[in-house]
Image (cartoon, rainbow, N blue to C red; front, side):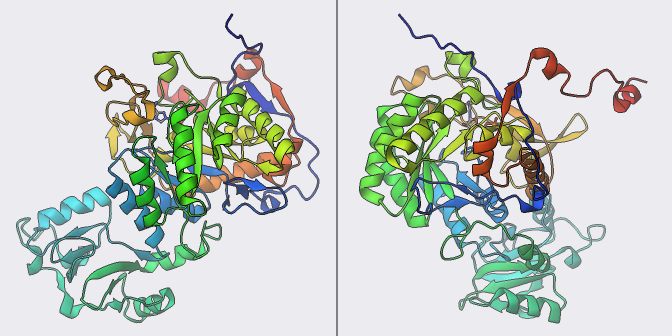
Length: 501
Ligand code: RVP
């Protein structure tokens, strides 16, 4: 007879934290959010840790090089999406590893024979008003000039005017030579009253741009997640098909860790993939695996050698796997069972395997719940898709700004490897939707608030670290009535009253 679980499958919103004594030390400023990212033996230090317990999802609409840079600057990690060519993905990883705070690879580039119309278009697309003019229009081509809004007046000029007629030509530019330090670049910016300093190599090829504002922002990121060579840490998604070529290229590009991206990770394909990576790249790259939702799945992937385990099936905001296939499990139940399996494994072996709760974070407090239930960090898609740094378009719908957000199992992403069971690919079906999420501005502004909320809740629980929270938290199930009364209730909200009058 089939096995039946005694408990229903539960999600985060069905739980609340019961406060513990908050001692006077319990202030958000004293809370430490450092958390392990990969397995380690107790008594030793994990070789990779996060400074804040968040990762961005392995998705086309979430994690590219820009997201990875923005999130690592705040102390978290991105997994650059794997549903693209190996070359493109490796290039994105390379850009993150090459990134030097304050030194930006120019993302708005044109050729001298382009027109003012192209300038207007690119400005609209990227929101940036400094355009590098290179011979071939690439970010690293030979620099021939710069265009900023000071160089043209839209009201006067013809849109067909060629860039070389109005740009500031190279002969009149102040520039820095490759190898210059950020301090030296900044001194030049101040001395010459510049907004932007191009950095070129000895063949006059553009390498970076340094902006006046970036120097200040560097000082604002004390949590930056850096490797031993002070480069930002970055992850990448892989699949169980082309992993040999993909992992080789990603390691060459400098990736710190990879994660097998699959909706159901309890499979022999994942085991083979992990073993191959361990045999060929031991010591060079760490590998996470998943997703699983129970003890058996956890133990299977750990036995294969996984460095962390990702938990969750069907809980993602854009995910319709449960509807389409009837598989999955409530995210809270999954995290609770897998964390217990991790603790059991720790007792047996002295080895700690970090757990990532992936998908289904609707409110900021769900992150604290996931950590309290035993997760070491969480992975979010919808949350990050809303920000300027996500790779999708920002558009206006019904008077409001939104960003696009689509699932890896949607027809738009066509990431069939993530759902692949080795069957007839012509019979594939969607497991994700294409959607919009409300636009929310800059990543850092939002994440700072979220982190502050997490720390505040931890203080209520009397916990000054993730580990302490995991040990001390007291969780209670909430009744349906109690959920209803959890929000504002029995009052007339002012904005509702106004909108109906
Ligand atoms: P969310 O944060 O709730 O938006 O969930 C993001 C997670 O959803 C991803 O990390 C991934 O595990 C899952 N996902 C991505 N695509 C799809 C799909 O198309 N079904 N699901």
